Length: 203
Image 1: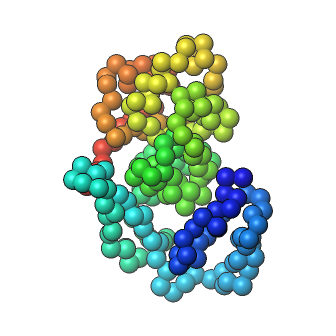
Image 2 (image 1 turned 180 degrees about the vertical axis):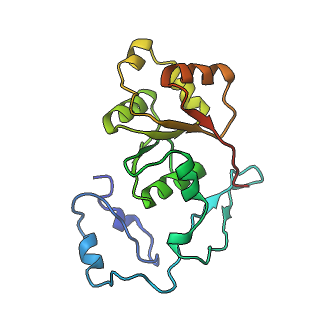
């Protein structure tokens, strides 16, 4: 329902748009039909592509950061895959992105986990209890949060927090801002010693 009529809202002159969604959409070609005539063999000069990440806007309007594409085949692309291993990702992992994909970390991690064949769950918007429900419902094993999300989850009534099963979690990362010591202690008391942090920047 959300995507219905999207083709009529797009401006003229756009390149071909590939959209993957469940169900049938009027005016859209089904994926199996779209690729039926394409070869299954690798492309000689195939590149993995890259994300167009945006700056935070501290120096004016956010700017797209265009980087040179790595001239190596997808199977040899370094970087994020090694990070996934360090994040204890396994073939049976279920990754939760509780943040919007227009932020750098959620988009990078979600696309890389998805590309690695890992089940990736993306919340439409962050909701403290909704995140707990998703962890229990989908058996989430890894997730990435920001400290304010921890704070909002901790502010839920204790009986609400305890009504959700968090035992599937193996590793949780947080970034974007330093986490207050007391908040991190409370999260470790709740979820166990599986909460790590990292620092990065688009700018």
